[in-house]
Image 1 (spheres, rainbow, N blue to C red):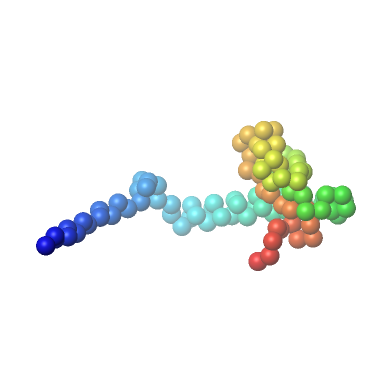
Image 2: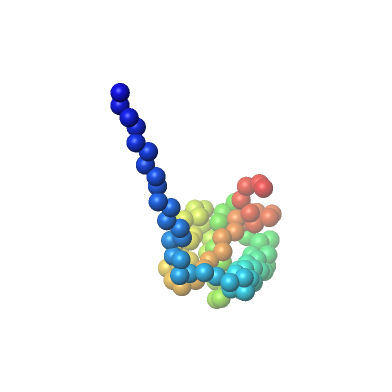
Length: 105
């Protein structure tokens, strides 16, 4: 009769154990992200009424630092255009419609 052997797996833990964020660091990151979103949202809401007429359901990438925005039908293309002009930017992507969001939640 053939006996089966059990193999135990070694649990490894975190990928980068030296990186441990404190609650303060997490809160600062969340606040910075929220401020970035609010600045981008203001730019989007200012431009939305005019853009919705001719570019409904197109994508819009907004750079909050410079105030630049880019429009295209494809999300990947609009992201690449934004990153080519502002390589260190974190663009925020909106859909040009009534809510600025694609899909339903």
